[in-house]
Image 1 (spheres, rainbow, N blue to C red):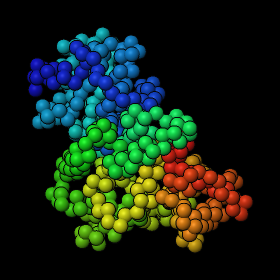
Image 2: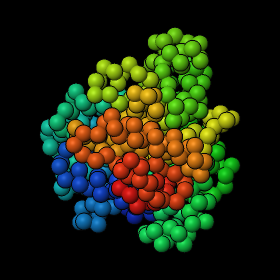
Image 3: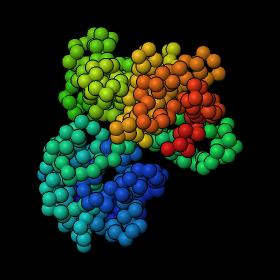
Image 4: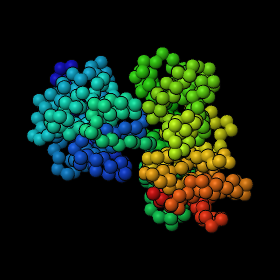
Length: 439
């Protein structure tokens, strides 16, 4: 591409001659990006396609402009612009920067934002060059965890920080709906509205654009488009796969199996494919952020990796759009919502089984200590359910408790209360209170 072609593309994505468009704030991510940018390392923003990574870049650009940075110092490059499609290379990155310098002529060190960087082969070499020359502040987004981790981990070790972005949490979802819940009182006073919004959140998830669309058929169409795009662009194209049908069947199978244990052998037998194909395709879906997993907790890492993992969806809307819902329990959906929130709050999450084979949905480990044991149940109105959940928590507490008191919790749609049994406190916590107020 010549300079005229390049600058014509760039001017449509940048704000040299116009104002940035209106966006929603995502406070936790916005603060994290501002804080990590201070380190002057390369900053990667990672997450599933359409989760809002580009908007977070735009929010940071607005922050820079509000703090005195000139518009001319900012270069935003959308590497999925179709006009770049046949030119994607390290040479193109050099041409883009030289074109920007030639026409815009920034008077100070520029901020360069590269959206969907994984589209450029060996992108890390270009970033390393720019980093070592200290000629730019560097920001990039990507939609494939394995690609980014393997390439930046080896070539850019010690030179980057990252931010992992999820679709909207329920608290963010409410802010997109202009529903302000800042206290338990406001939660109670808006109970009916919040329950309706939560039902929508369960059915259509938290992808920002889907949340803002009102028509349900359009929401479903958008979600199916996301699903197809993730499979085709982030997996089939990237790994040169020639069996889309098997990949699609596996994705649907996993999204229909949320909150349950899955092994590669089970996948192999269900789809009647080889173990190697089942393992590879499972990894591809994980790398594209469409699913996530947790391991069975054991102090022995070897025992962790040989046991089945529990699988979860990155977004309930995606799950509900493509999965088989026959016989699906509401408790599984609730557990998936809790999992996603736990991922935002903690880095080490497991499930656990007691010696009596009672299962604990979530075990939280912080540093060297186990801190939380959490069960998820849609309702505890059946005494058998309540007895079962408390029994599992008390048995696990006996096995795992060391020098600190563990937080024992049941998250449910029922009202919050404390239950004391055998001198141990089990907190029953309403899901809305936990999502909106407990951190």
